Structures are given as C-alpha cells and as structure tokens.
Image: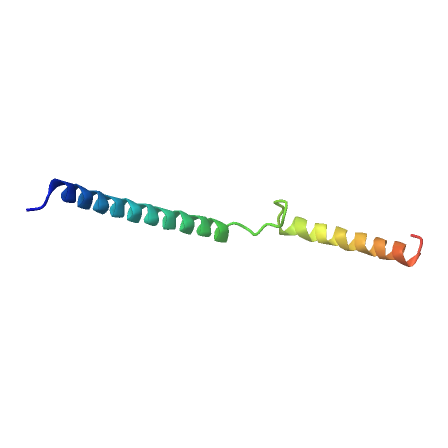
Length: 77
C-alpha cells in the first residue's frame, strides 16, 4: 500500500500541473485578445496620431528638411 506522503506529493503534483495548464490557457487567451485588439484598431503612428495626422506631420518634416538644406547650401529664404 502507498504511504500517505506519496499520495499527498502525487496529489500536489497533479494540482500544480492543472493550475499551470489553466494559467497557460488563460495567458494564451489574453494574448489572442490583445492580438485581435491590435488587428481591429486603426494603425497609429508614434505619439498616438492617426494616419491623416501622420501625413501632415510627414509633410511638415519634409518642409523642415528643405529649409535646412537651403540653409546648408547658403540660400536665403
């Protein structure tokens, strides 16, 4: 017959495995939820701006680059 300590150890091991499996499934579910959230939201550029604001920002940056190139070549604006 098995000793009580062996039965307790086996029960604890089974309980630990069940808990680890449940936590792993919960983690995978949370990751899939976050993946769906990322896929469904419109893509944002750094700073939390949308695509239209990003185009405006890119146009502004291009204008700044033109001004800096003009300054570097010695042309007065």
